[in-house]
Image 1 (spheres, rainbow, N blue to C red):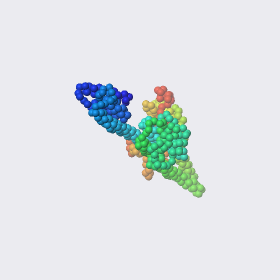
Image 2 (cartoon, helix red, strand yellow):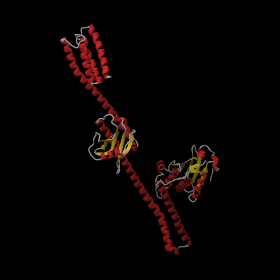
Image 3 (cartoon, rainbow, N blue to C red):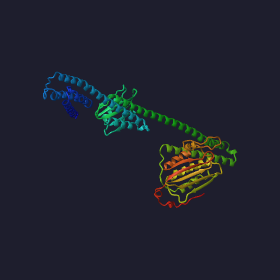
Image 4 (tube, rainbow, N blue to C red):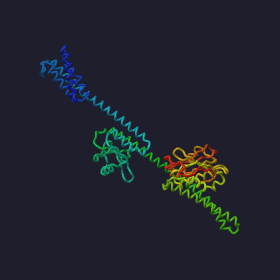
Length: 501
């Protein structure tokens, strides 16, 4: 095609020269063909330009210079004209070809710079650090047009495939070859090894290897400067991922240390108090039992029993927390009558609620909920115990429930000390207590944490609401409807009406 287009341009220049020479006495016919040589060199390169120059000499000699229709040229002026044209073509052709190649190289560099910018922008925009290797593989395949794999080191195993794009697959020999590259040494921008169909590049951050980039297939050659810049971008992204992982590990370790300190502090306090009371009462009975009256001995025995029950209750909560943290909480989800669960929880908390005015107001024809009755009942007991502990004696503790669009909402409202907005968000955290002031009720700070875990295991959710300090607190629990009622079944299926106690 370049030679065909050059030939057509020569024909056009020859026709123009014929028209002009037939009308005027122009001697330098070759001037009409100089633009053709220049056009051919700029558009197609050096060799089409040489072809245009040689064809011009023959066309001018054959059609325009006497004798006509002969390649022999007799006029010295015309001979000089052809020589000057040949010299001009010899200079203009290579210069135009060099300008053409330089323009193409600049355009290619501009494209590569734009590609590197896009790669850097996409990698910087990855929010989840775990997705960085896959993002690298996709971006490298986009800019190189080749299937790509990212290999990252694993403990005691060397580099392993972390992400891959394209249909090409790694085999065992490829992994062995990648492992052989995994050694300290100066960074290189040429392929470190060609193993089968994969070209592999060691990715280094400074002098430290952080991974391997593998490109599949031969494809077009990639410029060393471009590959060096691309590897540097990849190394920066992988280093960011590594630093984020270290930061997360440090954060988890700090959180674990904080939790361990809280556990030790809480356990030491909550175990020491009942144990001291038990030991004191038992020592009194042992040493001075004969000197105590029957009423005093019964009082000491009752103190031992109460403190032992308190200790058992605390150990039970620690056991629940251990189950939750170990992932051994396996609820049995089934249609549950919320009225039965609330009544059972109220019966268990009757001694705690004796000093308060307790009310239960459940909406008529409350539908069944999909939950675990035992876990839900224990969660309600913990919440009621917390409300009775912090609400002033004689105040109202209200338990209510109603159906919403797609769930049943159960709420427990007290008239206690209330909470700030920040405390409402933190109240479900491990060992968190809204107050540590002297004279306030003691506690482990585990009850609401366990309640939330139990309710979420049942597929529900719980939030704490308070208008502020001194305004009381409302715990709102959302529970999913059982399938029969969720699909629009008979809401009166439970046979229970609203309850007001």
